Image 1 (cartoon, rainbow, N blue to C red):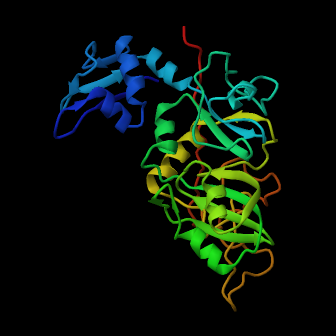
Image 2 (image 1 turned 180 degrees about the horizontal axis):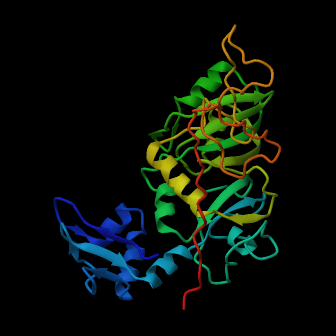
Image 3 (image 1 turned 90 degrees about the vertical axis):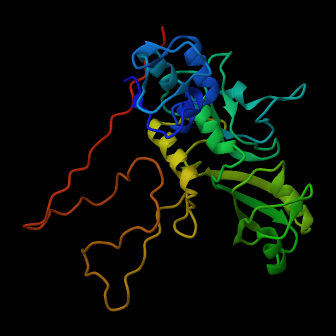
Amino acid sequence: MAWTKTYSGSEPMRVNKWLATEGVCSRREADALIEKGLVKINGEVLTEAGYKIEDGQTLSLTEKAARRLDNQLSLMFHKPIGIVSGTPEPGEIPAVRLINQQSLSGRAHAIPGRNNKLAPLGRLDKDSHGLLIMSEDGVLAKALIGPESKLEKEYHVKVRGDVTEDKLKLLRHGLELDGRQLRPAAVTVIKDNELKFLLREGRNRQIRRMCDLVELRVIDLIRVRIGPLALAGLPEGKWRPISARERDELLRWEAKGFSAEPTAPVIAEPVRRPAPAGKRPPAGGKRPAAVGKKPLGKPRSDAPPSSKPKPNEPKFKRTKLNPRKRTPIK
């Protein structure tokens, strides 16, 4: 369905800026749509790229513009060690070259061609592995790698050296890289010499350089989560598309600055709060509600069936949202 909305700002605003603010597309994508005559103001085709929309005017995108934006591909890829996420040097293999039919996990509405516009949204070093998001979506790119991005990323890091509380304190807040103070990080011990890092920034080889500063040597680094999207279940070297619901959730997490801590582990099941002493539910009764946010994905198939509602208790019906229909652009 074509996008339509009436502008209600106190001051006129450039159309491309407003579309980007509304999360419809990036400014560059908006300019491309205007150039192709796919944007209308009050029913008339917009031809001026710098046009400012005024209060009360209605902007609409044509069906072709809507299909063009819907067909933008975003995906998550389990990058192996030895593959580069960005522009390769001679002899190196870029991650985008591995995105094909053979490496697809599940189904996709489209398979990227050789001349696709997929770009990695964030760094992942050649000698690191784990979750890499790639996309043609300018709005998603700004949310994930924009200078003001607040999206949390989780890494599991195996190190060599003595892990002390003083070193952990420095890793959490007290280090500088390239003359700039790092943002606070959540760093905890998983087991022995394996650490968990939660970061909201992405400097070049940041975790390895942070560990070097406290005399810890990184021997393995894997990114297991970006915002609400977890790597769990995606085999190494495989990719799958990001759904419209997952895209919306990524944008919501970034806008709100959500964190998975200190609530539930991302890959494991949601943590459940124990009932207070003396108030435990009887056997067969309802389990305590899950703390924190549910990870994206399908519900567990072995979950117990819901109990029947009591008399005079209102019934609630869950609405199932159908995925957006993707059609090829003619």
